[in-house]
Image (cartoon, rainbow, N blue to C red):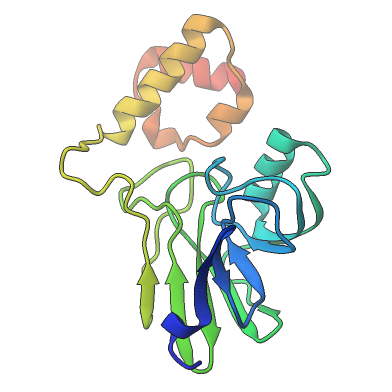
Length: 195
């Protein structure tokens, strides 16, 4: 079982890592889950044990309640962990706050499961980091050339304007935005009032 292709298996609940005895982003509650990010298609409630980035766990708790898992372990990027025979750590995925690639090492081989990721700058999360590996399991949801994403500044402006229009401003939104993204006078005033 030296090749990563031999120690990963597709089961009904999702991708299963044999040496770690854990699932990666399972679609149903399992004994042990490694979660790449808090979107519902990757993070469901009810697991006995969850390992994920601290921000991902915080979002899972907000979405599913305090008892979203029997036990959870909050990780930071590059924090090495051992789970049964598996060593693993998280790398930033650049997708959303807390999103992570899972780097798994076993028997001298390295496999990276990307989860969803983004390679362009996003001010709301840590940027994608590439590392060498023997096998890279990638998401491909938006890989077709028909998907053209607008510049991040344009999307941030849309978010700020929609919040302002609905009077639902929250300081949590603006704490995520670096000052170099606040360009117009109205946004600067709005930003300084909220912070």
